[in-house]
Amino acid sequence: QDFGIPEMLNQLGIKSENMGLCTGTQWFETQGTILTSSSPIDGHPIAKIHQASSSDYIHMVDKALQAFHDWRRTPAPKRGDIVRKIGNALREEKENLAKLISLEMGKIYQESLGEVQEMIDICDFAVGLSRQLYGYTMQSERPGHRLLDQYHPLGVVGIISAFNFPMAVWAWNTMIALVCGDVCVWKPSSKVPLCAIAVHHAIEKVLKDNKVTEGVVNLIVAPSSEIGDLMAEDKRISLISITGSTQVGKKVSQKVGARLGRTIAELGGNNAIIVTQTADLQLAIPAIVFGAVGTTGQRCTSTRRLIIHDSIYSEVIDMLKKAYQQIKLKIGHPLDPKTIVGPLIDDEATELYKDTIRTAQEQGCSILFGNKVITSGIPDKGHYVLPTIIEAQNHLPIVQHESFVPVLYLMKYQQFEEAISMHNDVPQGLSSSIFSRDMQECETFISGIGSDCGIANVNIGTSGAEIGGAFGGEKETGGGRESGSDAWKAYMRQQTNTINWSKDLPLAQGIQFEL
Ligand code: UN1
Image (cartoon, rainbow, N blue to C red):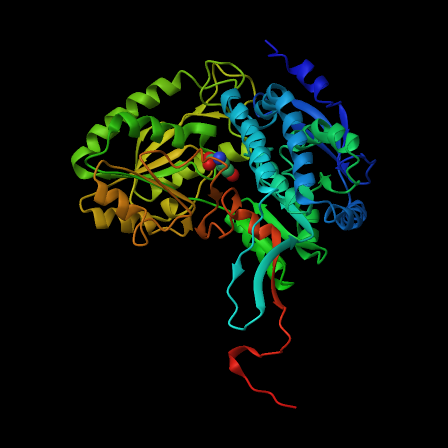
């Protein structure tokens, strides 16, 4: 069964060889090496991409800077209108784009549809935002004076994204940046370049038909080691938004920081759910399972730790084991509607899965379920593993570290305070949840003395955030925010204005300065 893959590739304009440099309205022959994108489903090559070189990069950022001069002059609601049309173009290609995500990244079709929906949603959000982008008006201490702040376009926004959300992360950054008057340069993960190429094909007509200047929306497919560093060090890029591991994010943030550039870093998570004695387990179990095994444990919001009240610990284990038994039968091709867990991204990820479990065992943990690389009943050369449950302790080095594989650590607590401190006692701070029907516990969890994460949920899981909220975390997660709420402010420069409409020149703080 080919699941309509050849037609999908054709409709999305993916050829056997593709150009890896696009300025929104133009594609370029490049001077870099050839990259082959293979499917994690069966290891088969999908297509080749001509990567960009560093001189291609320099040329592209020049174009982006020129385009910024036009784009920032376009009124924000007009920019929003382009984003609305981009959203409509993505709507039209929703199924094809989702199929490509499943093919190139390996997540199941339902989750891929969800990812495309996130792109559409952020377009809608950005359209509304384009008539807002509010500043405040403050009261001046001086008579006949007006004090206000406003937000102006920032410049070139560089987006460096990871393999696990090969389209949506681009959209969260780009659509907000576009209505803010910025231009974008996107370097996608080299594991999923075709997803990036396909969205550019999908929006090309909108940009051309609406005469959007070349260079407003740019794509560069190139090796991370070369172009990632160039982007980080490039003074022409005002903001770098990076999604990836804490290790890579630290390196990039240091380079951007050294030139006092701005960064939004959305790095590792080590997300926990506290399951209290009053938790409704009918809600908690599916939320835990989706959080831990969804996207084969490769979301930055994936549930990695469960902190369970002693009194329900064995009941939760039994329920989880039952659920994981069901999953065992539903691991396979991500485009098969029966599948709920697809492959890991590559061989390296399978090695990481094995290493993680081995290390956990060495550190004294016991395996409650899983620990198996699947080789039969799945497509040849795919990277399929059995989601794994491990009984662990929070302080162990393996638990303190984010492993991007479907391994869930279980631990128990007696006192609620102990649960909160275990919860916070990791270097990362992205997402978190509590399952409880005790209002005091729930409110404590989301209060200033509760979860220290950027996302703290009550009676829903750690993953699957809506685009309307700001998305990001604290501590080693990096500290930036993308997507909804007021995350747009990071994509603009704030300017404070004092306007004197009186006939005097009073100084602030009552200073007398007589000539
Ligand atoms: C990511 O894994 O990098 O909240 C992003 C979620 C998704 C986004 C995940 N909306 O799980």
